[in-house]
Each structure stands twice: as C-alpha cells, then as structure tokens.
Image (cartoon, rainbow, N blue to C red):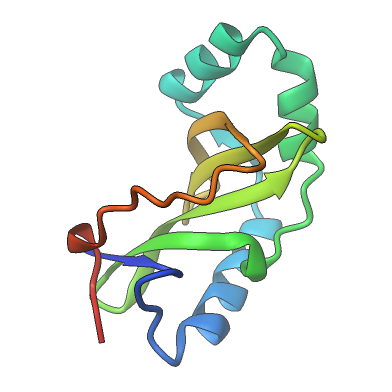
Length: 121
C-alpha cells in the first residue's frame, strides 16, 4: 500500500481521485471501529466529536494524507476545525469506517513530519 502526504507529494491526479473518494463516502452509512470509539471515550467529548464527524460534509481539500492500493484510495486522513484550540483528525476507510480519531492543536504544523514514510515524485 502506498502512503501519500500533502506536504511531501500528491500525484497530479490526487484531487480528482480524492474528490470521487469523498463523493463515495457521502453515499454510505458510517461504521466505527472499536479503536475509534475508545479514542473518543478517552477524550471525554464523545457526543460532540461524533456529531462533528457525523455531520461533516466530505471535502477532499481537508485530506492531508491518504493510502492507495493498486491506484484505489483505501483510506484518507482528514483535518477539520473543531474549536479555537483543537482540530479533529480522523481516518476513514473507503467503506466509511471511522478507523481512528484524535484532537490536534490548531497551531501544530507537523515540523517533525518523517517524510521517509511517504511516496515522493
């Protein structure tokens, strides 16, 4: 499986593929991994986070990382605004399964990003 990050490299066809990925997600019902539910419970804001994710209008421009297998997007990582201090980061599969979710400080710009984990041009 190939891994891509917006700050490292997205292939030229990424916007169109990610847009289709988001359209397909919109047409499906949510499911939630046990890990995602545990992460939300640990945070203590279960209903607020689930509501934000459930009502999210999928926008490929909020994807900063994705995984592809044989040219098909398997999962994507979204970053969406939540509060003035935190963004919600969540990973969703092509079947609209919430894999994991966590809060990240809005000021965190990932200067420690390990670029060796991602595909390059």
